[in-house]
Image (cartoon, rainbow, N blue to C red):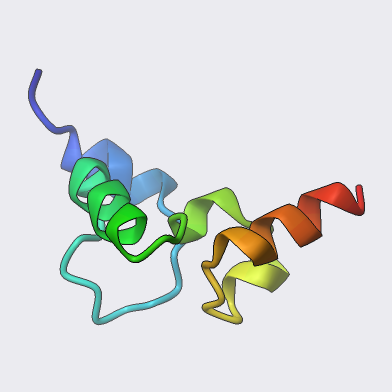
Length: 65
């Protein structure tokens, strides 16, 4: 399977501009998982902009909905 970077970039909601993994979802997921985090695209826009990608923040956000 080839990475569809163009399509990925069109859907990427991450606002962290200097990220070298933008559009490379497999690299992004691996990076954040090593850090015990989730990628920004899994968070609602307001939460994504805080750059708190922690699992605890993800659970807190979605357990309130």
